[in-house]
Length: 457
Image (cartoon, rainbow, N blue to C red; front, side, top):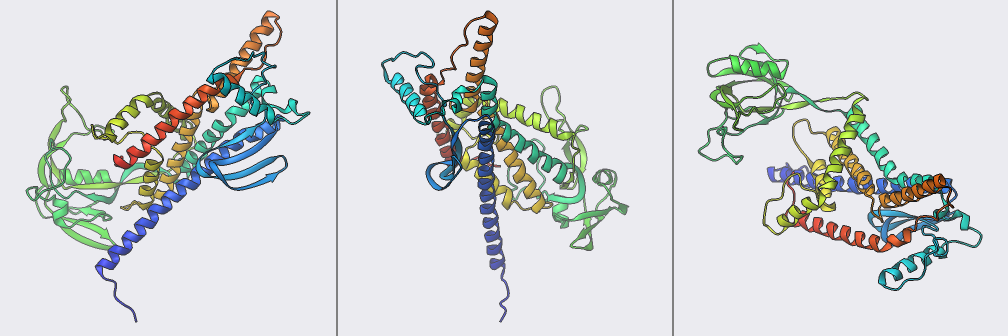
């Protein structure tokens, strides 16, 4: 026996579907992030093996090991906390006798000596030539840049798929994306409609999102620009509007209102006067917003898009301390959290969930997939830029050490001096611990902020 579906059942079904979509979006983000981390570490693994360095471990994640297998001389595994990964290269730090380092006292000296001892223990008898510190400076740079460059390559591929394969929003179509519920004054702050606000002509006439405009006042409509011109130039009330709705033609009657509306320039941006006020003009107003046409981009658009994304991410990284102060103030309730605020893993997961559960005109699986791929591309660009910071334990810190080593050796060669010892990166271990603590505090702050004062997207 079939039971008819009630309105509450349908609403519950939609909520259930939305929740499943939300969780699916978060799962896709986690898997995509794990794949990005895994490929980042492969970017270190392959050149290291190519240059003869023994790689004892390749791990995705931190904490307890969930699964591992040993293939050849390398243990490959997956750990419980998917917030990073590492490859263990034997002999990262040169022994004390190689760098002619004398014993020193103090807590920092103990940390340095412990790091050197742990590094030396990994070198098997007869394999000193396979230690990382034995590599030339250029080879060290290649190994350490392999990870960030892999993230950049992933971002390039994903952005190419989004731009060339799916396309990006371009011009407006004749499909209605939104019906504005009420008429608000131009100078009114963004707010909800009240009982005192008059309904827009489009809302009063019964226009709905998804309607496709076919004609206005007897004039055929093929583009949104034609619709705008027809609304501006057609006087009177009860103007017939024909729309296509669910495959059928529906005729409605609209009565535009004459109200002050912002003046827009050729790019669609609001025009401001010398005092910074919005320039307005009387215009017939319906209260419709069109959906955007999805336009595929040429391959030539990929490099400029990637370059812009890298530059914008670098600017965010440079101003990160100031941004974190604002995040802290928002967490304490001292100010509103800005929509452009930096977010942590919780906030990124929320974005992925919202993308997957988004509903509206023109938002289908293709748009959701494109947006999720764009989010993953942004994360990989962030990993690329962040890892280039010249601080250990980040890749950029080891690159800086290798460049310093190469520069010293080149100067010695020019001056006819003996070849200098490898860069003593073990002396950076105390700094690495400090940087790790700072990053951990930043991560906890962003998690708390994403929960206590989430960014609204």
